[in-house]
Amino acid sequence: MVSALFILVVLAVLGAALASISVRQQRGSAGEFNALRAYQSARAGMEWGAYSVLMPAPPASPATDTPPACFPATDLAMSGELAGFVASVTCVRTGPVTDGDVSKTFYQLQATACNVPVAGSCATTPASPASTYVERRLSWTVSR
Image 1 (cartoon, rainbow, N blue to C red):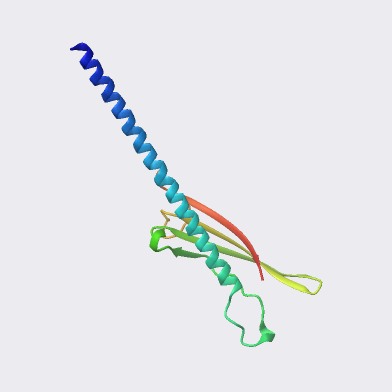
Image 2 (tube, rainbow, N blue to C red):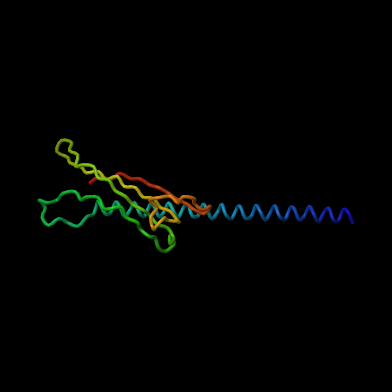
């Protein structure tokens, strides 16, 4: 009787340990999946920003072909598989810089993507983020 009770207690402890390990693994896997979604959201924000500064509306005449100004800080709500994520995109323009007869304008783009935006923006990190909070930042420099 004592040995049967001992075996039941040991099996119960083993079962609880396996359940705990399984829950931790599932949380880790979900965290990795959300980290990938945050990266893809930031990447989508960077693509949007690069398109905005590299492909502006055509000028009224070729003589007025000046590089476009930066867009204002923009928050993009994702949809589809990335629903629930927001990418906050900023731009800083430098130039035009002239080297000989070549003139280039540089744009420093930064996208921050997160799954729990504060007031619809990822520009500020929550004061006490939840354990499921993920954030990714990407930065590109593009020239025109």
